[in-house]
Length: 352
Ligand code: NAD
Ligand code: IPM
Ligand code: MN
Image (cartoon, rainbow, N blue to C red):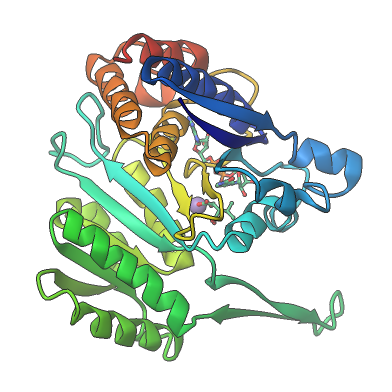
């Protein structure tokens, strides 16, 4: 029987609630498909910070390096500045394990109403490949004359040829497996260095994939077209910040953040990849057991695919589709009145 070591970090807010439920789905799926998930749960996050003045222990990253995958809920607390929580836990994991691809699929499933009129199930089916370790998120910069009248903040973006090329190549490979259509998101009209390099690398790599039809769109126009004609998109590759913003739009047009799954993928299999939904800790609804667990559950399916348990992963996705289609036990964000727990139980009862 295959066994996998999974580091579970529920984190903050609704992260704790949706991870709890998604782990029940994973357990049920593992039993049915004859593999074993050995979890170790870490109480890292904002509560840990209140006690220890840090988000995880000093050797936290070293501890995680032993696992086959990391399953994370969300990080962020209204009483702590976000740059402290996120730079103390989530972002260092993405960087340390070189999880340079952030994969974010968005599908309009049957039973889900898009806020866009006239959209039928399946008419939106796209995946954003977000660069995940550099770009606008490079932790480079500083303050000068901090807290004085003339204070200065410098935040530098870092775009390397290596970092740009590998995420673009990954996107072309993905496009070859899908409908051979790839859109690159740029802003080279204003960002005359970083995005010019991005465009140049995209054009060079495209020569290795003559079968893939490509286009390049400015980020502002892409935001518009995700709303105006989302069916035009299939695989979309974007820098770290552009991908972050676009994937909230992609989530909204396909039913909201409660359905948006995400994986931070390291191609080097000796590093663990990390699976966490696109949404955050949602302090506005935390502790009420009303958060939608389906994003975390679809994220769990993504983790199983990554581990090679494809049959189990597909059966979780199918069960989620049935729950959406029948609209039985949906949470309030999708127009139902079920709790987080009831929704997850409904997924479990539909698992093959
Ligand atoms: P958010 O994603 O937490 O919430 C945005 C809105 O969507 C809220 O109204 C929330 O109630 C709703 N929502 C989100 N997930 C939902 C779910 N599963 N079911 C139902 N409704 C859901 O974004 P925010 O409010 O901008 O950020 C809150 C905190 O989370 C901040 O501290 C932020 O930095 C952090 N954050 C963390 C991550 C992460 O850990 N990956 C991602 C985004 C934001
Ligand atoms: C996401 C989140 C994070 C990001 C934040 C919390 C740092 O918004 O995963 O989309 O910007 O990457
Ligand atoms: Mn985001």
